[in-house]
Amino acid sequence: MLEEMSFRTRKWVRPEDLNANDTLFGGSVLRWVDEEAAIFAILQLGNHRVVTKFMSSVEFVASARLGDLVELGLTATRFGRTSLTMRAEVRNIVTHEPIVTVDEIVFVNLGDDGRPAPHGFTEATHTRDRVPQHRPD
Image (cartoon, rainbow, N blue to C red; front, side, top):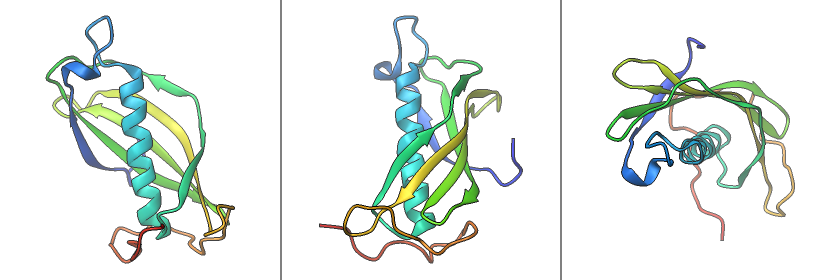
């Protein structure tokens, strides 16, 4: 795990998050990862117009059960001209045991025309100075 990873999102495993084996459904985890990664990209790039371009292979290391508390962490690993690459880990809050790792998630910054646009950033921020001031129509 990278030292800079911060775990900010927490989820409670609920009945609707379970698969037929009564363990955490992979689709629920991936939805959480993609949503949190999008929020992270918006805050890092200062733009509501970001899209998922790529997600590397996903490694399911362990599972979770009904009532477990899990947390999701992200860290920026690279800033491209129009993109942001990050790493994600989902782990059990109590044991800190990894549940899922995703080595690479790439988001692309879009301009008003819906095409990739330079964002001008080269490193992550941990303040709120890049929060977008308006939402796109």
